[in-house]
Amino acid sequence: MNSTSALLQIRRSRDGLLLVPLVLWLVTLFTTALFSNLCFAQGIDNIRLGIIGCDTSHAPEFAKILNAVEASGPLASVRVTVAYPGGSNDLPESRDNVDNYVKQLKGMGIEVVDSIDELLDRVDAVLLESVDGRPHLGQARKVFASKKPVFIDKPLAASLADVVEILQVAEESGTPCFSASALRYGPAVLNARAKGNVGDILGCAAYSPCELEPHHADLFWYGVHGVETLIAIMGTGCESVIRVQSDGTELVVGVWKDGRIGTFRGTRTGPHAYGATLYGSKRVEHFVGFDGYEPLVLEIATFFQTQQPPVAAEETLEIFAFMEAADESKRLNGLPVTLESVLQKAREEVAHRKRPQQSGN
Image (cartoon, rainbow, N blue to C red; front, side, top):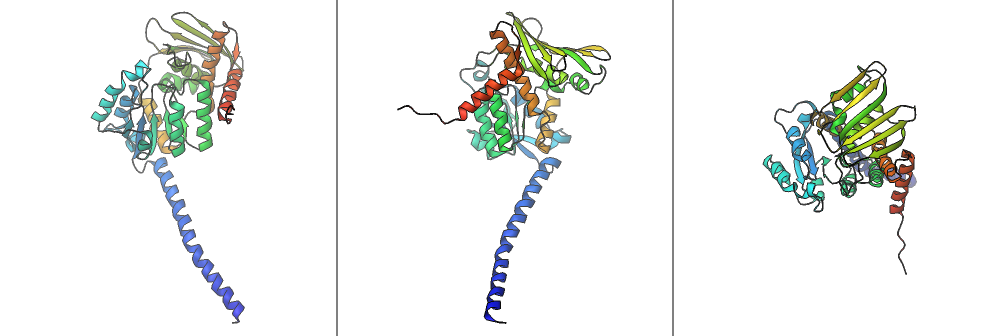
């Protein structure tokens, strides 16, 4: 063997030796990621959940269901282990309840921490439960940076622009995320979506309580439950709305692109009731009532295992665009407003936020 051949042989051997650790590292990294995904998908290990925002009854109520000793199926593989109180001092519903709900969570053995960052270090997935929609964008950004799956409770945000930005950042970061009202998972709504007893949905008149909160767009605070019921039943495709308001009542009429009409009635007087009348191709039916949190919590637990959002971002966006268009119709004394017009305005606001601000001289 001449000197040139010997040098080439040594170089090949050396390069091969250098490649071995790199290949082993890549294989280990891939295997770890694959195993982690399988743990979520198959529920192999317990998934540690963290609650951000303990100022809503949903925090202890969801934790009771998720941490129940008798939990089975998807619920058996998830457990709330940590919570961050949060809270908004200028919102009585938050300020006056957070201490009580924190006490309840501690009574279940759930650790309470002082920051979202500390919480994220200790969990695999997140329940963003803050009753105030205003801090959701900032809180969600931290979760998205960690890429941990997150359920964001109602209201998703206090403004349509924040809704748009939350969904944009979730997509950009590749973080599994969804938001939903428990009303979506009642048996009557699920039956209607499956084209059950009533057949094809020709129209729907949904209703729910609709208290107003000055820091949120009118229907975002509580009317969202009835609006989500409406759109869950009708499906997406609403093009425009008109709104009429009195002291105790909201009435929003939506026109779908296929000519169907759906209405939302929000109440502030009379019974605190949820329901809808379904106008189907086979029959007309009416349902009333709230079926509890368990069906929603089951969907959340399944989502944390599969990392597949059960509600499309496009549908969530339409729900909030419907409500924002209703607000705009009110400002215009009941004139029709398209959902696309308010979405365009919200997107422009988000784009403006992202542009570097010019400093004055």
